[in-house]
Length: 475
Image (tube, rainbow, N blue to C red):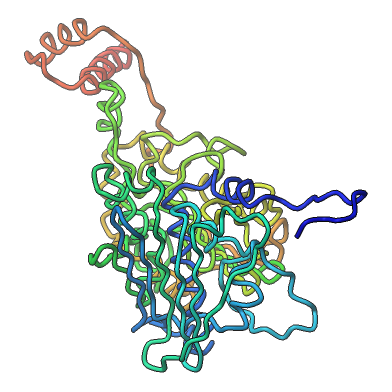
């Protein structure tokens, strides 16, 4: 409304500025993931809490995503949005603080800022229709392209609809797509395949719990998080993950780190280094999970402690090491999340304390890998009795297995840590001898010793050392 008092200054934001600021720093895939988050959050509001504790709490529920150059659609059967929520907060640019007297049910959702749906809509297009039905009521809200251009009103019209007891859910259709979005949706950019892979990783736990996601009619399968371990039921020693479990200020923490496959052979590492070869590290590094959403995947940077606090920087040698931290809280604002919900907040005191524990666990396996590198002949024996175990299976087994837990009395007071007794071997006294020589010189020595100039450089070096050592012992 126009201001009549000349002494009063209009300090309200313009819609154009607000929308551009809201959408500038978020990638398209993250905006779409926000909408999937909303589907699951709606499911948690509608499903009895006792059901959420089951093995397959999301079974029978789905979210279907379709897109082309003309429109984007996401629809689900996750309970719908009630009209009170629609009128008071669902379409607000931000979330109203809940008063202390509000007895709203506490649930492990991830929405804390109230901007996900609106940001996704404006990221993709200029007009939208949101239709939602609970079992008892429903509504439709249309955001026309003219709404963005009208600076005099922020109001939207809600049209009441009948409820739907058989399929309670929400449908969002976004039209008038921006040209940059159309170019990603038509398939030439590879966006559809990339987004499919992201969903398979970041919603892996939710999909494994029974939730169905399809993208352009193709069903998404979860990408597993796994470790290798000896039998934990009768554990005394051997390859097993480092574990931590605890709770801080209403946030439950479950941490696991270890090998997800046998450590790489030193000769293979040396060959890759010499040839500057690229290496596959798809499952290496840390995964951070907040309320079942994977917000950071396979990270090998300082964000998860690599290269800090006595942990070496990630290297080919550590390609078999992976870790997972799971944060669970009924109050999403306590989770160490960024506003995009696709990263960790390094300023979070909680995350800083947990990262210390992550580094403690990582050091166990980087140190063991360094020792193992000196005795390549021991590698197969070390991993002989290990078997692959999924992350969720590991969480279930760790509480029933007879493991020795130590109570943490420092930064994570009250939590409990299990540190595996990894194999030891006589080779722990061995040291690495390395030196560089030209390819031509190595081939010349290989021909002299083996009558074969194709022998691996490592074998040539070992033969040279053994020959001189024999002479030294006889001297």
